Amino acid sequence: MEGMRTGSRGRSRQSGLDETGRSIAKGQQLKRALRPRMLETSMQGTGRSNLLTRLRRAVRAFREDPAPPRAPSAAAAPAAPALSRQAMLAHPTSLASTLKRLRANVDEIGTLVCLGSGKGDDALSFVEQWPGARVLLIDMDESFRPVWNQLARKMPGLVGEVAALAEHDGEVGMRKTDRTGGIALEGPLDGDAQRIRSVRLDTLIAQHALPPPYFLKFDTHGAELPILAGAQETLKQTAILMMECYNFKLGFAGGRNLTFDEMSLHLKGLGFRAADLCDPLWRPGDGLLWQLHLFFLKADHPAFASSSYRAPGRGQAG
Image (cartoon, one colour):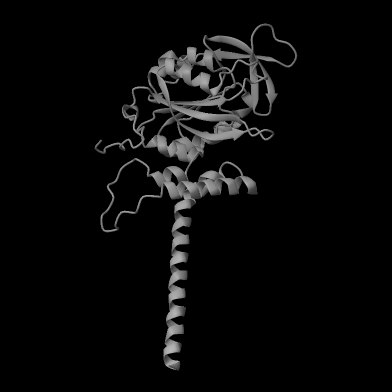
């Protein structure tokens, strides 16, 4: 009898161990499934209450929509540029992740054009995805030239132009507003303003014989409309357009900037559709969306042919 009791206790302990093992395994499975969502939410804030709220939502979403089972290791997945659902969640809104997604849909970029480039050192991230692309940096501030010269050693063929982009070629005034920015001025100059060249983007592209397709990166704070008006020929051969957009009219830009919804409609009229975004920024006081970068592709790009959420990747059957 003692032996039977001992055996019973042994089975009980073993049963408890098995149950513990199953609980641990289930917890690890849940942790693996939630990791992409946790990474995604980490981009949106680090306060404990915010994190707990998003974590509860992620758990609820997992229960309602669990991650699909992994394919057996014996069957190799076919190579395709399309990113998996897990990868889309794990790499939400960083510039590097967005460029990687765009690279899956745009094979070739001949020239990256940075409008309002500043130092222009972020051009390296773009050239990593499209090696061999030429680079044109344009800014109103002459002080960036030494940095451009250093970048040219890493990116042969880089061209830098000090000018104000505009609808017509000519001259405008420029006043510095801070270390990295300035505003173009119409009319007579006063104070510390200086006169600089104004030029159409079409003029610069032809002047340097820069090859298409073009990737236009805008950081121009309200000057977008005249710049686009001076880039009509360039836009015909533009594959990707990146636009820094705001949710508010900017005081320092005189309220001339288009908000992100207005910009989307304007570019739709020029034959482009929004395809991705990166680096959203929220106001610290009330948490409202302040700005984001939107990426646009030509409206006739094959990716827009399907309106299904489960659209096939490139090279896959529909």
